Image 1 (tube, one colour):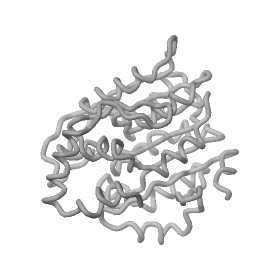
Image 2 (cartoon, rainbow, N blue to C red; image 1 turned 180 degrees about the horizontal axis):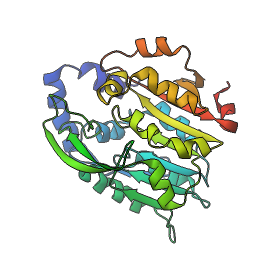
Image 3 (cartoon, one colour; image 1 turned 120 degrees about the vertical axis):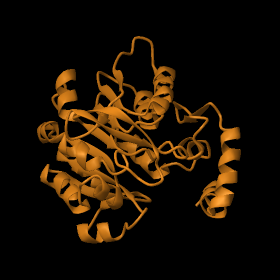
Image 4 (tube, rainbow, N blue to C red; image 1 turned 60 degrees about the vertical axis):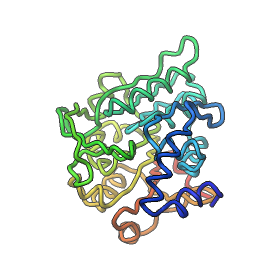
Length: 287
């Protein structure tokens, strides 16, 4: 744990100190942060995701894994793109004929996502598409609950802490892939606070056709339950589509192990980020 991580997650953990720290962090946030050659435009009202990016403590392992797995020319779908961290990483790696489709239903986050895309765009580049939808298991609409303190914690279900809500349009990835003429995916990132099961259910057709595919997904049992999916069902869905599950380790990926133990190890607010590999990409799960 770095000094910045220790200060942010341990010393400033108590709520009064966290509130004070959040105010300080927001006042000090830069407009843009660089990660390698990628540039991410930060939300000055978000001390959590943007704050962690500025402090260099946000998903360091996930970023390293993504950069090792993403290859120019891939079709990459970024579900729950927020301000566009992973989109920027992909854009900075080059397109070489690939496409990047970003979904972010929150208008505030999408404003900074668009800025991130513009900042990383190269002359003549027309391969990145920003869409205002919530990926789900059906086309339609749903309630969207916003967290005023953590712009990365918006949800598709009611919560006592989330009073502000609006209606957003939902689309399945299957239908969007048809619209874009995408026959298969090579890389899918999902971070949607428990709605991951709905995303996969709405992408089953294109994922079945995707011979070689990587999914980077948040796994939060509590959130999955709240969205109508048991965590076991979610893991089984991925495996039934031909994916093998891996957990993140300090030096790479390791088999996720027993599903029951994985679920039991993440009660309440605890979550994990998993990588699911299919086809030739399974080789990346060997150490």
